[in-house]
Amino acid sequence: MKIAVFCGSSTGDKIEYINATKELGKFFAQNEIDVVYGGGNVGLMGTIADAVMANGGKVYGVIPEKLQEKELAHAGITELMVVSNMHERKALMASMADAFVVLPGGVGTLEETFEVWTWAQLGFHNKPCAFFNINGFYDKLFEMIEHMCASKFLKQEHFDMLIKTDNQEKLLKAIKEYMPPKHKW
Image (cartoon, rainbow, N blue to C red):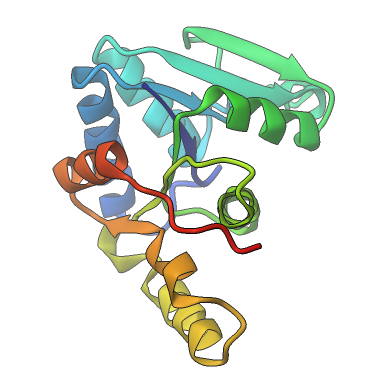
C-alpha cells in the first residue's frame, strides 16, 4: 500500500507534532506502507520521510523543479521525482497513492487535502482521505466544516467520509475498511 502524506514544510510550535510524525513514519514502515509525499527535506515532510527510511520503509518524493533548485529536495529517499510544477506534483502523487493522510501543516497542506477530498466527493477516485489529528490540530477546522454542513453547503455524509483520528492503529484499520459514500452528483 502507498499512502500520500500531506504535511507542513515546517515542524510547527509543539514537539508533539514532530514526535507523532516520527512514530507514524515508523508505524508505516513496520506495516509495509510506502509513503508518497512532496519530496522535501524540511519540516514534517522531512520528518516523515526520515522516519520511514530509518525503519526500513520506502519513500517516494515528488517535487517541483523550483523547490528542488532551492535545495529543499530530500536526497536520502527511495526515489525522488522532479516535475515541472505543483499541478504535476499533485496529479502524480494522487495517481501513485492508495490513500491520503493529512498531518499538521499550512495553506499548502490544506490545498492538497481539499483537492483530493473534493475529487473523492465527485467520484474521481474512491480512495480514503484521513486527518491524523495530532494534538487536536484540526479540531477548529472540523468545527468550520460542521458549520458548512449545518448551513447546507456540504452534506454530512461527505464530512463523515473523512477519517479523523490520532491513533495509528485506528487510522490503518479505517483506511483498510473504507467504503466511499455515494458520489455528490
